[in-house]
Amino acid sequence: MADIKIGVVGIPSKWSTETLADAVEAKTGFRLVIDMNEVSLDLESGRLHFREHDLCQLDALIIKKISASYSPNTLDRLELLRVAERAGVQVFSPAVNILRLIDRLSCTITLHNAGIPMPPTRVTEDIDAAKVAVRDFGSAVFKPLYSTKARGMCVIDTDMDADAIDINIRAFQKDNPMMYIQKKIDLPGRDFGMIFLAGQYLGTYARVNPGDSWNTTIHSGGRYEAHEPDQSVIDLAERAQAPFNMDFTTVDVAETADGPIVFEVSAFGGFRGAQEGIGLNVADLYVDHVINKIV
Image 1 (tube, rainbow, N blue to C red):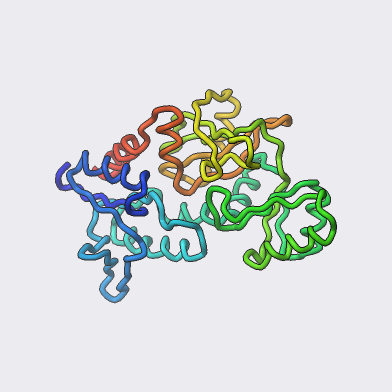
Image 2: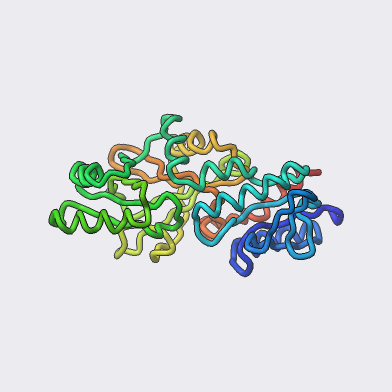
């Protein structure tokens, strides 16, 4: 495998990025971690520069993380990688497929159109409509269209007085003109990351609430545990990820009194949850998948 050159797009020094680069290096002898902040495109020459490398000359690129946080700029970075695809570089997962997941609204509409059960959701730029959503839901989670690990989210509920609700909604809308509002679901202190490689189910880890947070993310103090879901839940997650045709992804699922629901399909998926929750080395399996596709 010494002639295969696979670059890893990610955040240098971050665990998941370096773990993936380690797996690539172990199997090919080549290591290149690409920070998109340093990439430049020359359309005239058709070259995509990263330091001394032309990314269009690689055999493959694996996108572990396109930026530290999601924003419209993240979409621009993915557009650059489409040039590498045009030059014959295989990108995992393809840039267009990831584009549909970076924007929370795009992901939600796709899931809705596929008939996937989700929390009740309202999307609006209108302050009065947002107030109606809070009133109807009782407790509502306001989510940025571009965010990970619950960053930028806030809970607004009817326990607040009318002035406080108005102030909080307007404060959220300053940074989020299009407001994405979901009913806050009562969860049993955990939700699940269900892992898929090339559409095949690999396993599930739970994110367990630390007890003092409304969400279960590790960013908020949650922890990973193993979990064995019912086959009906696996089937639901499989249907949820199918429209996106990702090489690797996780589906965020929660079990409620009314049955399982899907929160989102991940643009990049969680390596650490798989490793710490169920002892699964996803990076190793992912690199094997990539090599099998390009050889």
